[in-house]
Amino acid sequence: MRRRADLMGTPPKTRSQYLLNGLRRRCPRCGREPLFRRWNRVRDGCNACGLRYPINPGDPWAFLLVIDRGALILPPIALIYFGLLPRDPVMIVALFAAFIAVVIYTTPHRYGICIALDVLTRGEHDADPIGYPSRADPKASTTDKENQLGQR
Image (cartoon, rainbow, N blue to C red; front, side):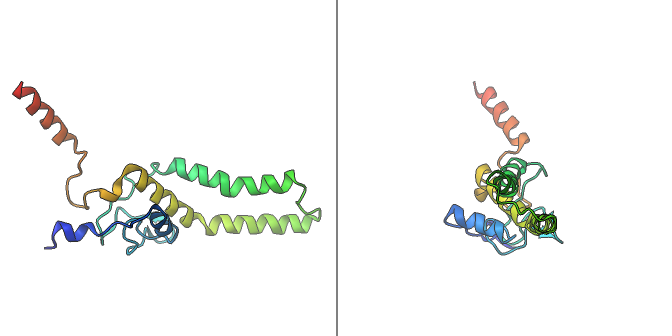
């Protein structure tokens, strides 16, 4: 059986490394295991370092919302606002098709960055490995409260 310290892995030294691992669709902490099954199904966690990915599917939603607005909606608005949109209907359709292709292709990359941001903001880079009780175990907190009340 592997020791718990071996499962933890060593977290990256910088935040940019977490984001780069997310962009590469790898575990934000160690970068060894893939973040997704198939194309965009998020795994439960990393088998190499034991990091748990977002427990609720909506956890990185706010980050995805901000990234999508900044990277996918602002450029077309800027093209229209500054008059850089081509006048030829064929070019407009080609530009729209290319834009849709980029959106579809970058979906797992963007979601990987969102998961990395979620991991950084929740402090999961120091989380317990899979299979061990988490620090935020509700049963542990109630027994601690009961013990404190009993000691008074």
